[in-house]
Image (cartoon, rainbow, N blue to C red; front, side, top):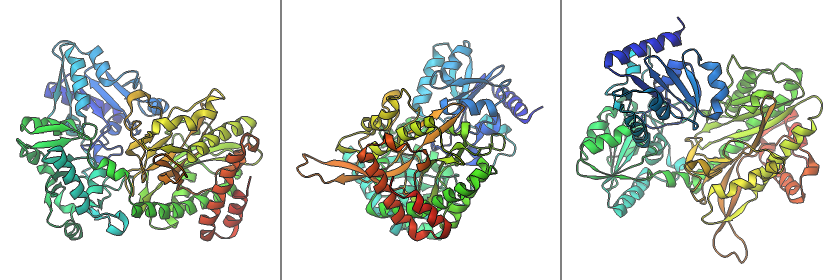
Length: 599
């Protein structure tokens, strides 16, 4: 019997023992994190699916897996279709599917530490219409059959020093306390790992790709806080850094502390806090106010120290990416480079540039048709050679103590020239990228109002791309950070209505994808900054581009660029030369000079 079939059988037997007719398994942890620790990779262990978003439902006779459009191809490669039906979200959902399957009296289980309150309410309602019940489990039945489940990471937390954070934890807690007082609240539950890290000026290595420590905080209106973390993870240095206004508590006493808030007015974020937190507070008769985590907006608005740190990190990272692109220009045309060997070479160039703590996400290294899979993750099974005379897309980033980077470059692998279609599509993507980079907009503008700028030239050719144009980025934190984003406002996605404010980092990454052929994306990070306009009526903002690495000129059709676009290209590459040339020498420097020559 195949391991995944055996695991599914073991889970079904466990559910039968516990008296449940079904169970829902998401990719999630107790903090609603995008990337989760090995102990929380339950969906991958059960099904083999390795994407970053999805869920499965297991019933006695049937099972199904639910993923969005990014993973339609990947799920079929990794998950056995004899064991699981494949379903696409948002066309359907676990709740909608269950409502079609269940009968009167069915009991469907869920782990309340792995789902949000809105999900529980919607699923409970869908099942109730069929006379079925959604039941919260005391302990996860999958964990009972996962014999070699890794323990949560024991890695110690560490201090993010003031010279990198730019503001003390005490000052941040003071601002949260002021907010609580204004709202007439006693406390706020902070459960998102990047919010905890930001508020306490600590970092960790408990989750791949995001430097956070597994813990919760309850912040109080007097500026104090309780930090719930495994005691062994707190070094003397971390304890001294926090002082006595932050009380250290064992992580497993968090539920008891929620219960102790009986009668208190408590703020909880329904988007970032799991259902168990709401249920515990409700049972304890606390007065819960649903409101956005008060760390989210101040965390997104980077202070001058964080902005300077990001510029420094980007300059080092740009040097590493430039060395990689030069290497690729030499090795790619030989026909020996694969997606995996290219990703490893890029990782090594980043390591060589100093102070790399981790990648900021798994490198998307897509040759030819694999580049058309938006969130492609290369594996031994899918690894392709970068064929001479083809398009290669690489989206990657690094975690450095002073900043988090994220850059996409699309490269023509020689010899020979790119075709007219590839050049046309690339240049349309470039024109959109430039339009967004040059945008000027009044205070109050949301990301959704700028999104069209990046798509307009693709639309004129009757094509588009099915992802957002920009996401927020953290400061040595999560590479995908809210609340700001640049995207179409449809679909009710969080953040598209958030006004863009000076100090926010975002990505600028339009693209184009031709299924079965190639993918194109050009991504730089940008900073929202004040724009001084003579005679301006009110505040106007624009973007400072933070990423400085040559853009694949072999794919540009210069006749499609107008005068201001060509001027942007030339000014951008003059700045690339200024920032990168002091770091490079020999053949790499000569290559850079060619790449930065005016169009």
